[in-house]
Image 1 (cartoon, rainbow, N blue to C red):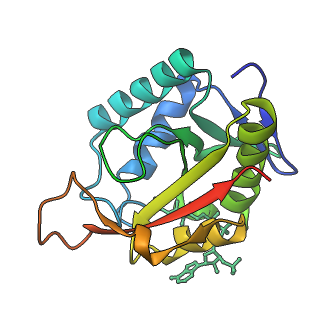
Image 2: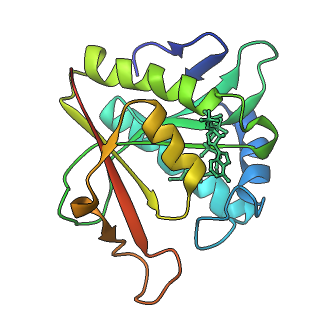
Length: 179
Ligand SMILES: CC(C)(COP(=O)(O)OP(=O)(O)OC[C@H]1O[C@@H](n2cnc3c(N)ncnc32)[C@H](O)[C@@H]1OP(=O)(O)O)[C@@H](O)C(=O)NCCC(=O)NCCS
């Protein structure tokens, strides 16, 4: 990323060493990880932050650290990633988000995601974005809808990294095209 993405309340930026502690805390919170197979240990959380930062370095975009401008608190990530699995909609660029529970339901994910969408289309020149989540993740689906993404039920898919019969396997796909 050449420049940070700024919105009214958020700064989306490269990761700092100090982000590791609050990131490990949110990854250990069962509320945050309700729609993922499991919470992350501190080691897993740190490895995940390493991988995120490495990908930003390689690609010039990625899952940015989200900082609240009023007090510089690290609250999670909002940004872009490239799914590593094969599905009917890959290759693609995905927009995604994960915030600490204390900051939910204030419109922050939507605000940051709108900034990322503008960056993706206007600065990176991407033509389309997808987002996906397990069917029951209604807050995340709501963010997708609020940023103007649309879902065609024909795009729904079983996540290939989850075993058959897993309660999170059924996923919905949302798309957004450059205006
Ligand atoms: C998904 C997530 C990032 C949303 O962050 P947020 O800052 O709370 O999002 P916003 O405030 O912008 O919007 C949340 C919307 O979900 C709605 N919502 C919250 N809980 C809900 C529920 N149980 N059922 C239905 N809608 C719900 C809110 O009312 C709000 O919609 P509204 O503005 O129309 O009222 C946050 O919940 C999170 O980090 N979850 C855990 C990680 C995760 O699941 N990430 C996505 C993986 S695909």
